[in-house]
Image: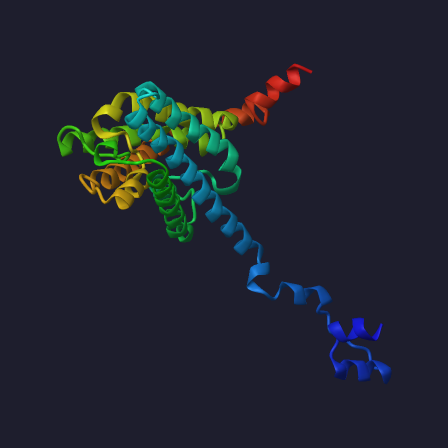
Length: 281
């Protein structure tokens, strides 16, 4: 009993108790366990988000750029296979990590969310660092595993003029952010299908623009391979283009976002999928 008391009450208080004086302190014993910074739930949460963005970006770049490397070296993936790989890996990682970090995996998306108040400003640098770290680590892994020659470069570089690639990157990034805004930030959308919608958009963009600009849509996707392989040709295009396009796409969706009454208020249903599930039982 003495040991338990010593852990929660000072020695002076013990003597007062022995003299019959009532101690009025209302500080619970459990408070001592929360004094460390690592015990803060906010610190734990942001750490989990950081790790999720690193891992998510790592596997997106590893799988997507990996398909490019394998196709260039062995010729077994094909262009459509590369397109499908990019769409599928993004879809898989959204469903795996979306509930933890929001599954950005893209500095342009993070910046746009912050501009339109869908994401706290102070977390933006942390997310960007995590995304760049994941991309560089994935690119380094591919460079170590495969014998990547200059002709097998798995980054992005404009095939035509810089202006052409810049315009195309802006357009496809606009479409990507427009879709993300619709399925991930509007409570009237079918949220359970967000991963499929975003992944399909990336697949389509890569099919159309991939042969010309590389269809980056993501500064981290271009910066990682460029840093690892020291190829910086046209890198500015893949920083300016996606950021400009995503901001414009987010702005465009916000112009049409608001209506008198959302569908969910009319139907009083949590989601389309839940409604279908209930009707099947």
